[in-house]
Image (tube, rainbow, N blue to C red):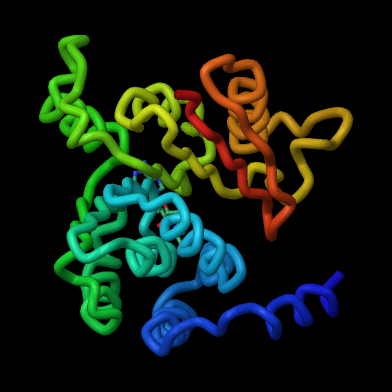
Length: 224
Ligand SMILES: C[S@@+](CC[C@H](N)C(=O)[O-])C[C@H]1O[C@@H](n2cnc3c(N)ncnc32)[C@H](O)[C@@H]1O
């Protein structure tokens, strides 16, 4: 499989200098470089942003900013991306990457727990009291890549923050193949993702497909 991925990578649009910098810094300054979305998924997401004409994006799980840069680089001039990250130690690295990519004015980094930040956003959008959000404030794309145990909760929290016809992209939904193992491993992350994939499959409000790209990307389309 590895030689096929190498070939695919060699035949996709190469990543930018700013992304090369983020990857290098991630290796030098963290022990978790495997968490990066990577060049293929990054390029696909950038193209999805461009092809759908997305203007507002929400990301859960910034890490060192790689996927935020990929997504935001597909946005039009007036576009905006909100990205949520728990680990405040990453803040300087993230913000320098956004500067180097020339995207600092398009991306807002929100440090804190996703669920708390989403609760605040929902209040600001008027959704907390059960009323309808201003259509201008709805997101066109949500990219979920934070705590795998909490994917179902994230889905419930973000669903009405996405415009009808918009996309929810969820990363790592194959979880290294563990979600297909029989018997299913009983650790909380595998169970969280398996429950999430079932929830999406059984949700009549969406259509979806899991792309077997890297660790699995669930592409979820909110019906009109
Ligand atoms: C897989 S990494 C994200 C990778 C990033 N999207 C990329 O492709 O470069 C997951 C990130 O989610 C963050 N995270 C985990 N739990 C979180 C939570 N409850 N709230 C906010 N961020 C969280 C972690 O600190 C980590 O940086």
